[in-house]
Image (tube, rainbow, N blue to C red; front, side, top):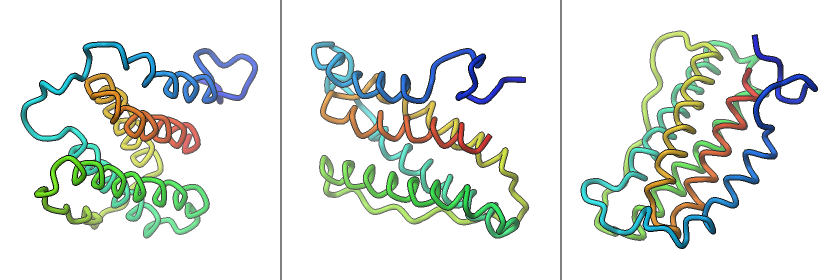
Length: 157
């Protein structure tokens, strides 16, 4: 079993190191050919915004079934709602004809804290992977989403 990131014997990187590394990512990619605008198909930020809305719906379902989780989950709901709005705004900035997306619907089942954590972790990993394929002007937003998701996944342990 892994110990909490703040413990002296925890392996891996700290949250601070992760955030610092992600903040340094845009300048590192600025001179790379990664993410040059040869992208075809749907904007990858659409899927990231949809994942944010899905995380919000999942967390809302967990809150409905276990209101005592509110102090731990409500900040995540607020952050992921802001992520969806920021990602949608960036998609609309590049393609104003893009229709707005509806919020994800909460499920009618019991959702555990572990399910919320796993979903947020997966969203963070998707954002981190997407950041490597984006042009430099979009990396900062997506890296910020990835860092936030990674931090909340740790907080929800």
